[in-house]
Length: 209
Image (cartoon, rainbow, N blue to C red):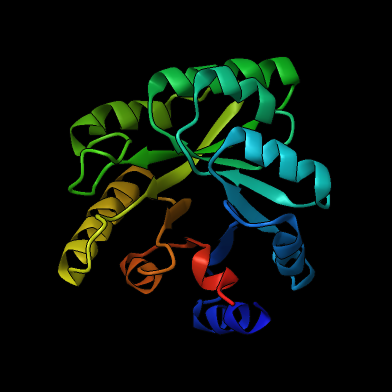
């Protein structure tokens, strides 16, 4: 793992943050990445996240990247570092309520749907005015700090590039003064970085043997 992790680090510009996607990985594998200097890890299932958190160092910065059900929000609010997958106003309001009860302020990203796949979740380009309103209307216990996106699941590089370009345009319009643009995974992160991503979510390429 160390070799693959170091290889990836060498490809990342200094202003791009690496988030290690640890879903499906063992606690020992995550600990190895942590010992190698990774502090940001991402999970997509609440129960798996809770179980791993109990067995791993407390200073890990946990990111949530899966579809988050409102009835599970309360369980991660006390410790979550960044919720990257806010895909509805209803979820955003739920996070704000639970964060207020926990006396925390939670950073979140708005998930935008730019892929040509109905299975992906998130706000669409048609929701732009609503997204602008969300960003410009402060909530008491939530900070909207950027955008998260996934490209179409395809080997067609031009399609992936177009998806990331679309997400970057939305991000730049919503956050003209800067923020977090999280996009790019193991197979497409160089394209995402070229499009403007300053956070990448890489899993399998790190944990490959």
